[in-house]
Structures are given as structure tokens and as C-alpha cells.
Length: 439
Image (cartoon, rainbow, N blue to C red; front, side):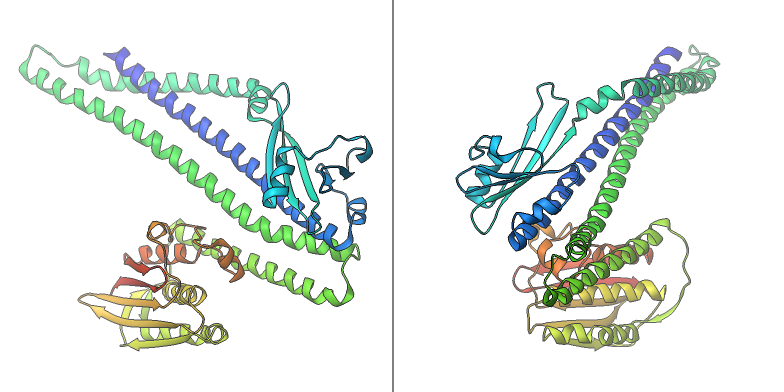
């Protein structure tokens, strides 16, 4: 019995450890691989803008670091390369990424070394004159990383194996001791033993479930970190690229205000994103916040006033109706709920549309309703819109300054008040979100 319990506990602990290492290691590799791809695409976009504005001189004057940039003419001949003499290079017209760029405007391919320890990512984009600009970077593969870290990985596994064995042995002894004290010939002892057997099975099952939950939590943490890094990196790359053009004197004097305005917009977007992340972090910690009596109609009037300029610019009418309903809650969070719902209703509305804000009550709950006449949400996206960084239309979200965190903040703020959210939406006709808060 003791050995069987020991094996179950040890196997469960090792399974949890191994699966966690696989997911964490694979997750971080996937994250950094994605970051390299994003960086290459950003560098390619900057290089394309520079070449189309200043020609090949831009490539000769710019240091691309570890990235390699190649310019290919419409007939496939290499006209410039940052790492080799273009005159000695073969025709690139049949390279996968070049061929795709000629045909579709953009191309991508990955090529591995003979030993499979290195891989090179290639991204290509067609220029206005029909030529193609390609950027590439070489990195080591996951297999090479694992081989290189074989010693520390084995050391960690050995230490974990010893610790798991010791803990499993102690736990199995603690479980078996009371069982050994039973007389199984005694009907009472036999009954207790029969009760303990399913209990042990349940413990084993719960350990497995805890292992899966831990693994999912690690995945969520990795995904959130990757999303935050990506969302911050995009405006940073844009600012850096613009600043580099300005620094090198490669922008016409009359275009300087436009470039400065772009840098200001990207910086403002970063500030908004950081503020939203801070709000979510505060809600995630579960710390108690100051509670007071909040009059919802007054908050709604304040929100309408704050967003009136944004609505006016898009010729959108903000209508508010309802009654003075008071709830006991956190004023700042309730303000966030109303502000984010109304802000989204304006951003994703049709020009000349309407936003209806309603405040009422239903039995022992206050009711907040925000309804718009906008683009609506496809059925397949409706269950995801409250997730962090989820965007239905990424291009429109970024143009409007959206961070992808607004509705996630709403969801967490409503949960903090033990409330409920309901969403109804029809693509092309509009969206209605209703929030119920205990009074």
C-alpha cells in the first residue's frame, strides 16, 4: 500500500514539473521568436519608407545591426546587399519570399542550416517601383537551445526528482500510518479502509487537476507578458524609427511637424496603455478600495460631458436618460465602467450615429445600459471581447487609440462589485451592453 501511494504521489509531482517546464520553456521560446518577427517587420517597414523616400543611399547610411537587408530588382537581380557584394550574388527571383513579394506584395520564408541548429527568417515587401526589399536575421533553434542548456536542465530535474521523492515518501507514510493501525478483519476497520481508498483516488485526481491549473496559469502569465511587451514595443519602434529619420536629417523641413505629431500620438498611446495595465493590476490584487455611496446618474452625466468633444468630432449624439439610482461601491471603478463603455460606443460607432446611456433599477439591482448604432460585434467574437488585448478590428482599434483593455477593465470592475454583464450585438446594427450592480 505504501509503495503504491508513494508511486502515485511521485508520478503526479514529476508530471506536473515536467509539463510546467515544457510549457514555460516552449512558451518563452515562442514569445521571443514572435518578438524577433515583430522587430524584423518593424525594421522592414522603416527600411521600405527610407528607400522609397531617399533611394539606396538610405541603406548605405543606415546601420541595421544583426539584420541583413537585400534589395532585388524586378527581374530578380540583387542590386544591393548589406552583407555581401551584390555583383557576385546569384539571381534571387525564385527565392520563396521574393517570389511571394513580387506576386502578393509581401513574402515570408524560413530556412534552416544543414545541422538544424540555426534558422534564418526572411521577410520581403514590394516597393512602389516594382523592386523588392528583403530583411533577414539568423537565430538558433529550440533544439539548439535545449542542447546548449542540457547540463542545467538535467541538474534541475535531478534536484526536483530528489525533492519530489522525499516529499512523496513523507506524505505516503503519513497516509499509511493510520491505515496500518486498522484491523482489516474488523468490520469497522474494513469499512474505514474502504472509505479511505476512494479518498486517495480523489487526492490523486485533485493533484492532477492542480497540475493542469498551474500549467494554465503559467500559460496565461506568459501570454499576458507577451501581449504587454508587444503592445508597448509597437509604438516604441514607431517612435524610434521616426526619431532616426529626424536625427539623420532625412525628413524634409515641411514634413517635420507631421513626424513630430506621429511621435506624440504614439507616446500618448503608450501612456494610455500603461495606465490601463496599472488599473488591471490593482483589480487583480484584490485589495480593498474605499467604498462610498455613488449616484449613477451623476456619474453618467460627468462621463457624457468628458466624452462630448470626442462624440462631436464624429457627429455622434450622446443621449442620457434614467433616474437617480445610488449604489454602495468604489466611485473610481464605477466611473471606469461607464467611461469605457461609452468610449467604445463612440469609437466603434458609425459617423453620425447615436449612443444611448440608460440608468435605472430592477428589484435590488441598479442597471446601467449603453447602446450604440455602430458596427456591431460578430457572433464568434462576442464571447471574447472582455478578454485582455482582444480586438475585433485591430487596425481600427489602433487608429482610434484603443489599447484592447477597456472592456477587460469593465469586466473586472463589475466583478469587484459582485455584478453581472450582458451583451447583445448585431453586426452592422449596433451593440448593447447592460451592467447590473447590487444596490
